[in-house]
Image (cartoon, rainbow, N blue to C red):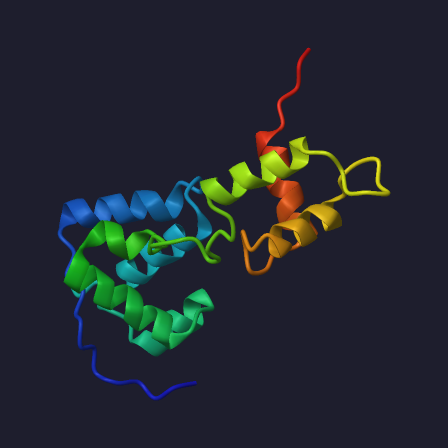
Length: 157
């Protein structure tokens, strides 16, 4: 385990904050990460009756890494209670979409056109090849084509 260093971000909770964190840690209905973060802050509190625990003691008690304890404390001191409890929101999707509205419109137009010679209908692979051949996209898979078409398909009851 890492060597304990002095606490650069001391957590001092008032009675109202302590009550909210205890409620979050004990109700059992909050996400597990939120409960763990609340418990870290409660154990780090300088106003705690038994005194604050070290980062190593907290990490061992909760089964998390000492760096996680440090990050939670830092976010609490610098940003406040809610950011320390909640997960950091993702700024953008993990993978940028390959096709945009223009490319999807072109895909629909290709689907509505006649199938290639020697074929009775378009396949996902043929559509992907045609999109690249027409330079609408530089690279696309049949699965991406399938998902784009599935989004646009409507059923009539």
